[in-house]
Image (cartoon, helix red, strand yellow):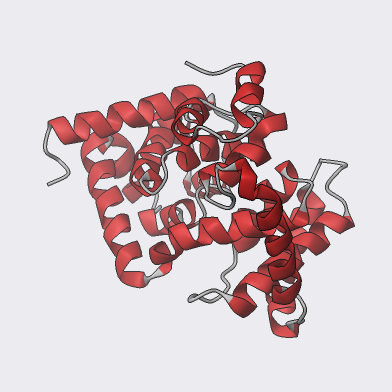
Length: 285
């Protein structure tokens, strides 16, 4: 059951301590826009639930951010330029101005210059967008992005990615055999869409409002959301199969790379149902 905005306000404004377990339980069902940034900073562990340490931690985060973002990186700036330009041309949000684009570049350069064990890949701009959208504090956006990257970094290793691609393909073939066969006939492979869906948590494909709602659930699950993510991807195919069966190759690819808006509460519920069905039938073994 979703919590009201007043309920989130009460959780987040207690004098001494944020009840993290209650916040996780509430956030699974979605966070009101005005409380999303504050909720995410606790869910992702950027700040401590103890209010007594909050001010000193904020000062330290600001100092760390300034240190991390002192340098420039021309090569990385050029690498992300095409994606920044696409985002600029497709953004319908008037608040998403040049200052926001500069923040995205600064956050990515700071992270990949200082902390990442993986290289920048096209698509990573989209992982920053939800944070700079819901947070007015650039420093907080940076550390939220860093916290997310720490959680998903292993997904970018080829062995891990290959394992998840094969797992998704297996479930797709068994659960939605007609659509799977149709994709084969239309020469649309899993590799054409699922790696992006998986690596970037659908941030490149779903409308931004859908992404942020989905991430509310993911972040509430601490470190276990990557498992649910595969079932969310399967639920998208389930909800889309009637449309996709009417499309040809190029239309299918276009649809899968630019998904429509979904009822995310229903989609997440369907993902959980698919997960339960797979476990009950031992398909996960």
